Length: 424
Image (cartoon, rainbow, N blue to C red; front, side):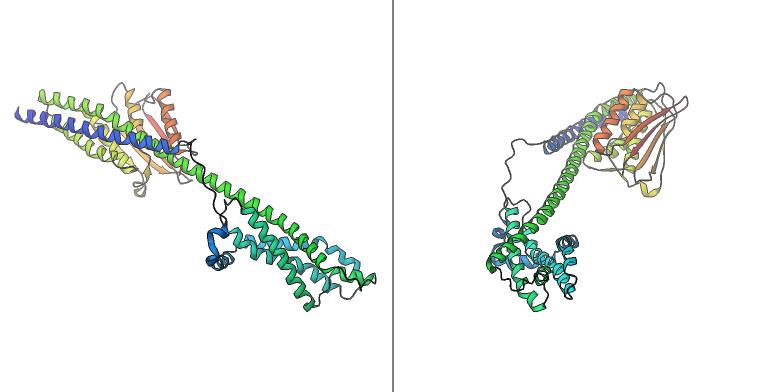
């Protein structure tokens, strides 16, 4: 009897130690769940973010040349295409006037002038728009800086046009039209014409830049919203995982206490299998306790936990319930959400009138990269209550966010099978 007394003493010490460890991990897991919930909850009293300073003020005069050079080098094909299309569009607006002067032999030169002028304007405005656009996207003065860049670009492009086109000897359509009407000696007021054409360039260009800015802001808003939804989903999954870990820490002590009581009674009655039952419990603790510290589990570790749990449950009834597994070797390290298979087994065994003699767990990959798990027992009518199955399904929906897992049960007179499909 000294061996039995020693075993009972060890079992009692193990029970107290396990309860202390489980209580500590339960507190840590509950704190992690509260932290995750607090992170995912909106904060109504949050202070408004300070407005970003204007791009030119944040860069400084010393860093302005480098900023301009980096902005030009960062030109994207989409931006270049937009400004080129803008130039071609405005060139084609009045291109039909060329039919009025096609009797003039210089009409090809006038058509070239008509198409090259808006392209020149577009490229000059693009060179000034890029450094401004690369500034802070949330700057409250952003549109003002963009308008200023377009205005400067309009005046600069007009100056370049007046210097380049006479050297190229490219007449405008208006010049040929005046020749046709014998108004070649027409001399407009230069500064009035200059300002009027600059304002015309500014108005048409600012409309295109404003439209592109609206598209950019909509794209940034959509990307920010998707990022926030992704972060919310990740925080929700972490919160549910923490709750599951806390749930495991709360459930395990009762299971361990009942098992230790059974082991102690077996030693009191000098049953031959008392030592084996204690070994099964120790094996289960070696598998289960590290999971309370680890945040992630794999298919192999989840199967090991299920196997050790079934062995302890069967040992308490002086029977055996082996678990056979079947899946490709490369699926063994596939990550799984915690506490998936064990609740299924508990739900099946809760309604069993007799303990099944065989358990089988299979896994296969779904076409989209997901995972299908099947847990089967050789006993009929073990699907459990519909409310319990619905609670497990709701837990899976919260865990997997926008793409929930699917859980269903099939039962007949000879066996019961749970099928769990996890998305990629």
